Length: 150
Image (cartoon, rainbow, N blue to C red):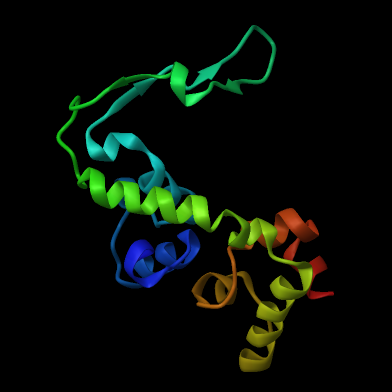
């Protein structure tokens, strides 16, 4: 769905939930879970150590990729490396098109479409709509969905 249809993480999560595909322990999918699967090298069979460094009482800092310890072939791969590499390339190319870089107007226009179609905006409608970003994006940008609605 990501490579062939160009769907974002939250859109993929919505589609998996619509198809009743369960995530870990029967929970529902969210954008964070989809992103984890699309970006984590364990799915191509690699075990990666030392991606972060942290001193006591400080925030973790990401280390350069050249300093990571990578054990290729540590696990049975779920996806081939070529497919994984295609997904990584798409993410690198589309970083500027990600939801965090959408303008307030673009985000609000998606909410306006929901209001036009349903006469109201709810978190449930946001989750099931194919045109909006995740509820989390609206909360991070506008503090609450209600503020976005205003």
